[in-house]
Length: 580
Ligand code: ADP
Image (cartoon, rainbow, N blue to C red):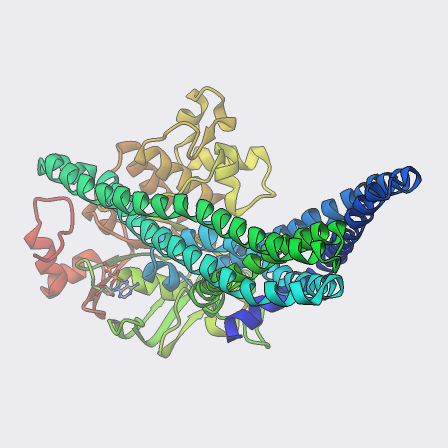
């Protein structure tokens, strides 16, 4: 057992109750199957001896036994499934909870698709983990019990069968493996096809712009034909499997009948014993083929468990608060950075030795070329990442020392791109303040200039948005995001301005939010437009991770540095361009 299997074992062990019930039921089924063989012998004997009395008793016993078997069979299937289902439900919960607590960096370095595949593909596979437990305990038990039984019935015939059986089992196992290998190849080819479909659909604009539809179709056909040929190869093997097994079965039955028939003729065995012998042999063969698949199932389960642990559960969650973490008191909004430097895990030095102070109520614009480190600076303030050196203080308290939730609850961010969750508009606005009253929600929407358009929607504030709801324009979504941010009444507001203008009302909303907030809350804007930059009390200019200049628009123009260059370069344009 490797380390991942052992850890999976702990999840399995949690479900010991239904597993034990299922196993007890399995033993019951085995016992009744053995009893059936015994009764078969008795029936034939009573027929042989024309004993009507015994025939009646035996037949009634068969009915009673099978009624009992009904319960055991039910329990065997249901409780095993219950253990499996509960195990995966538990695992899904653990995975989701863990994912929610992982740091932002995790999601940037991984594709969401890969994470989803762990949840939708690997988790269900682990249901088979409980099958493994059953098969490793149950099948050997049956094999041993029935083998002992056939030896009691007739040891000579048993010896002959026991020599043949492993050969048959081996053959079946080999065939099964071939089928499995091909199924695996087919799956790989199928994954190739889905990847292509996903890429082609996501990039449909690019495909159309470059008029490469035909090339995409040709690529698709090529890969699809691969899937087809793998599948057909697999189907041929699969189709061969059953008749082969049947043929081998028939040959061995004929063999046993032939030698058993001679024993019967010589009076060394009864007809009933021979029949019950064959019945048991069939049961043994079935259990043996079950054991053959254990290795395969184990490989699949083990691979899925490894992916689940390695890709998700073993990733260290977002730093927990230090044991002596304090609650950040309701902030006034002073932000200080002291010689802060930060390097991404990829090695990118995004912030170098940055120091500044922002007074409560100030409106600050962060400007600089794309890649200068503005967003990183904000992410550091939100403690999405921690600086390698230097300190960040809010109201004089080092943010590393405070409880994360108390820090983030006092900072609201209006991101460049708004995420609307499935739910109503009101729920979306109240996302960060679920206890807000409807009046407060409306008030926030009014401040964000969103009230009018919401009122015009079919169900007003109760209109559904998200995947299945109404589609809002970029500007409308942004105004929802502003309302969401304002409803929390934050002491620090971060506006990550969209690089291109969304709509004039959203622009006006932002201007007004900035003006109304002046002196009340600290506003930090990652600014992309000169109109916004000009209404800032102070401008911080970033270049290659460093804070190179700070001051008012007029001061910075006068000192004729990076800012003045930026400004002059785009004197007549609205946006601050990316470096070419
Ligand atoms: P800005 O917001 O000014 O455009 P960023 O803070 O996004 O700049 O980026 C600063 C630098 O850090 C850039 O060189 C960028 O490539 C790098 N960077 C940003 N995010 C990551 C990340 N998640 N991992 C690695 N490097 C990053």
